[in-house]
Length: 160
Image 1 (cartoon, rainbow, N blue to C red):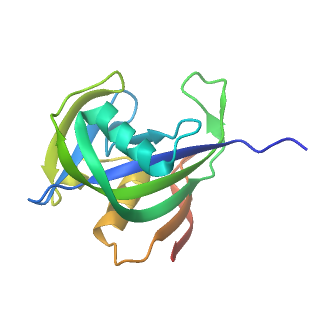
Image 2: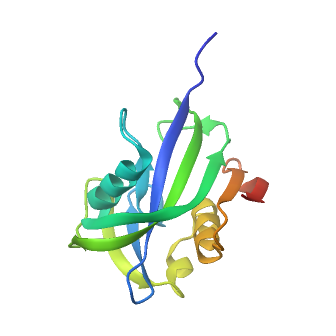
């Protein structure tokens, strides 16, 4: 039996005390909130702390889990050849505790944007759905299965 392959990722919805959210501009995906793949041997919370720092320069502490998301779309990577495995993403609410805004190899810009304006920047429908889940968080973890190719479609949505 072949072992299944999944990408495990985490995202950090970082909000300061003034209602501003941290967003980063990626080279391939436009404006998003920081996050990325969890490394081998790394736990989810350490992964989100590392990813936020790498992509934005901001140090954070993890507050709580917002949602678990599955992108079950089957599609090719940017190279047009490599199959992208199913992605499982864990989004966490985070609080900034230090650092200074700075870009990285993965980001061309980063900034704090008031929560009322965040969706003016973030246009990717998968990220938009996840930001809305953060805004609507009521203490119950969101679960969402979606596909991004050929177009964004929600397959399953639950509160847990």
